[in-house]
Figure 1 (cartoon, rainbow, N blue to C red):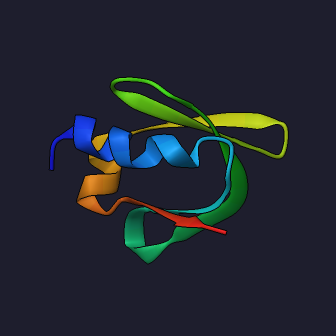
Figure 2 (cartoon, rainbow, N blue to C red):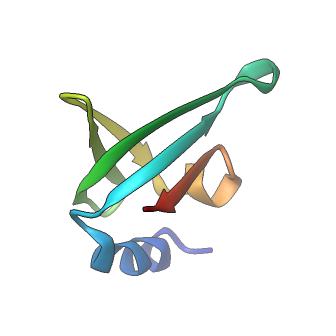
Figure 3 (cartoon, rainbow, N blue to C red):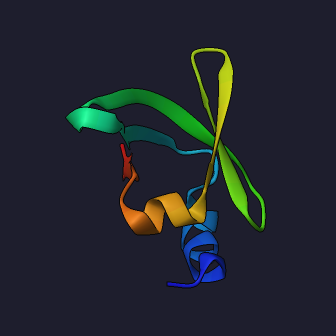
Length: 70
């Protein structure tokens, strides 16, 4: 899927709270709750616990990052 299409689908959710799951090596998964702050052409940012994390849309497409709207 094209990153622009993923970005367009996420735009209405800007400012919403999300559960982010990041699949790591050896089956480890990192989870946290945050808010979608900005959506840029290549990346998007999520603010969680006074820190800002950035991800690219390819990570969503590849399944390395999973976003659940809460």
